[in-house]
Length: 84
Image 1 (cartoon, one colour):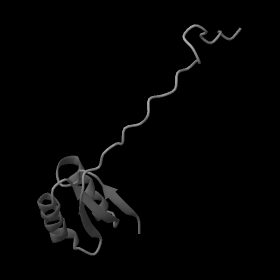
Image 2 (image 1 turned 30 degrees about the vertical axis):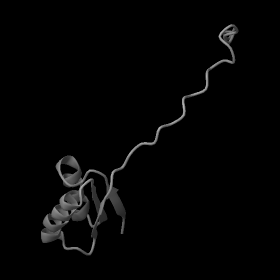
Image 3 (image 1 turned 45 degrees about the vertical axis):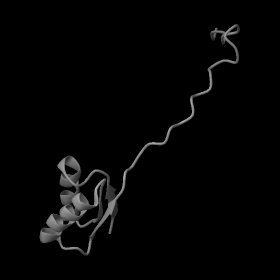
């Protein structure tokens, strides 16, 4: 059985994806920022699909700040020479 975690799946497109993956027999983890929204989504989804393939987790998924990329050349005075 395939497992999927769908972020932002308590409404909209994410909720629709959760329904579709459940229809296809996948184990689905519903995710949202607020516990009440996750609980509500699980209650609605479990009415049709049961709870044996459905879990929920409230959390905020963020992208960490990445370091700035290194310059393309070592100093502004000596840009890379063009390829011949």
